Structures are given as C-alpha cells and as structure tokens.
Length: 340
Image (cartoon, rainbow, N blue to C red; front, side):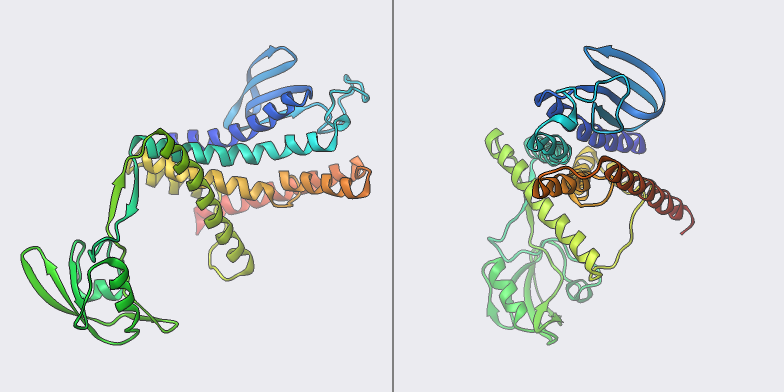
C-alpha cells in the first residue's frame, strides 16, 4: 500500500508540473494540442475544446503538447498566432517556468496541509532539557537520556538551552561533568564533547513541541517551509556538485523505496517526503541541462541577448540528445540499484 501511495504521489508531482505548463499556455493564448496522464500506448482519449486529454498505459507522470514547442505539426499553419514560436519571449519564458514554479507551490501546499492538520514541531529552548540523543555521539556514549534536565556543566549553573550549548562548546575534547535531574534522581555524568574546529559538540537536540497553527499561520508556514527546503536542497546540490558531500544519484526505484519506507510511518511522513521531492524537481528543472526547462530558458535568454532565436534545428538536436542521455542516466542508476 505504501508503494502504491508513493507512486501515486510522485505521479502527482509530475502531473502538476505539466499542469503548470498547460495553465500558463492557456493563459497566454497558446494552442494546447494534448495533455497526457502517463506515457506509452493510449488507453483512453477525449477531446475537450481543442485539447486531446488522454490516459496512457504507464501512469507515472505525463506530458503536455503545446503547438509550436516541438517539431512543426504539418496540419497546423506555421504562422499561427497561437503557436508557441510566434508568442513574445516573455510569454514563452512564462510557460517554461510555470512547470517548476508549480512544483514549488505544491511543496508549499504539502507543508501547509501538514501544518493545519497535524501541526509542526518546533524546538523548545526555554529549559536545559535534552531532546533527541544522536547515536554514536558523546552524549549517547556517556549514557545521557532524552528528557534529562541539565542543572550544571562543569559546576556552572545552566537555566536554558542556549546557556547549556555555550557551556558545552567551551569544552572541546575535554572531559566535563554534567549535573542532571532524571525523574526524581540527581546524577553527575562525565562527558567528553567532540572537538569540531575548536568547538565542543555532544550530539543532542533540544526537546521539540508540536505547534498547531491557525489558517493564516499555516499558510505562512507553507511558504516559509518551502523557502527553507529550497535553501537546504540547493545547498545539498551545490555541495554534491563541488564534491564536498559524498553521495550518489538515486534512480526511481530507490526513490520510491525510500519514500515508501517513510510512508509506512504515517501519511504525514509521505507529505513531508513529497514536499522535499517537489522542491528538488523545482531546482533540477531550472538547471541548464538539455531537455529540461532550465535549458529551454537558457535558449530564450540567448535569444533575448541576440535579438533573434537560436536555429530551431540546433535547439531541437540539443534537446533530443539531452533527453536520450538523461533517459540513459535514469535507466543506469535505476538498474544499478538492484545490483549494488
């Protein structure tokens, strides 16, 4: 069940991306020829207005066909004013950018839904209480436990979380005694904070509390959460590109497996994972990689600078080759996952 929900969720991310392109194309008066739910052989089709809506065999994703965006349809006049090619540059850029923007907005919707339904966790730093103890870190090795209240560090009284952190930071790599309160007991526990660039760290988070905001605060949480996710994911991608963060590309089976595992913990975990995935799609699609939206935006930027469009055949070859290479990469990392 969790795998089915995950596949459905990922399909929604891709379909909403294409819906963004579709709505922007309609808004700017372009002729949308087809909107497909899925890929491969057609299972069902209905024409509504001038658009063919179809359901295809492989229900993972979809695509939208805008007149003039791909190879010229011989049944359509080349000088059609509703063709993508014949629209102003800013309108074409709007249509291309609308897909990634739809993914970003969807991430905000997921976070909003989480906030207004189950609330969100927020660190409580008002007291020197211990929250999650990170496995393998000094605090765990010393035997500290969640909900322990720290009374003093090295004989210095602490009254809140920031003071506790400051005291720990002053003892990098040096043994220090923590006086704690655990239930009705008072204990003294020795800890040697890890030395991280001259700063002591002991691997503990502050306790968290669940906040259930109202409608306005939930909307704010949705947008702020999406911005925070964007900054985090962009930082991860940048570190990975520079080689400063270890990791490897994940194929679709691995992504589905990972998200499905989180989904088993509850629907809120699925929403959380889909929000992160949606932001990742937003960022990746804006990269100037051939066949992705970022590449098409780059060609439009070049057109804006040159005051004339790049040759259609050249751009077509770039996108086609890029698509084939991207497809090969996706297949490679997906197949590799089954054997590694």
